[in-house]
Amino acid sequence: MAGNGVGTRLSALFLLVLLVITIGMMQVQEAEGRMCKTPSGKFKGYCVSSTNCKNVCRTEGFPTGSCDFHVTSRKCYCYKPCP
Image (cartoon, rainbow, N blue to C red; front, side, top):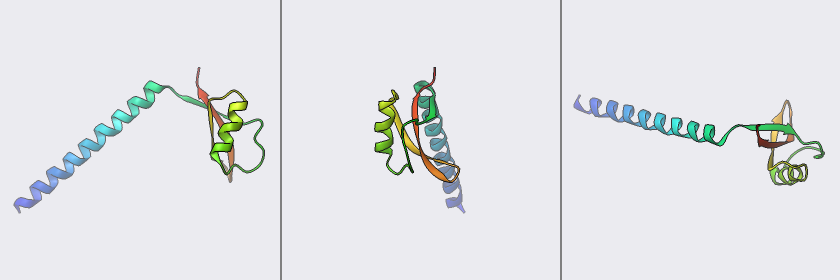
């Protein structure tokens, strides 16, 4: 019966550490600012490679881009820091 107390404490400690890590990650994202998502105006076709999407977005003046799901297909979306 003494082992049950140790297991419960370890579980509680694990959850506490996980909570602290999660809160820390949220603060990092908040400090970086939000990213605004815009569909690419130049990318054509089904988006398979985020590298190709990123390169097209850079020609449109965005710092980055990636293939994301949109309804039933994958489209190229460009990202930039929100104003």
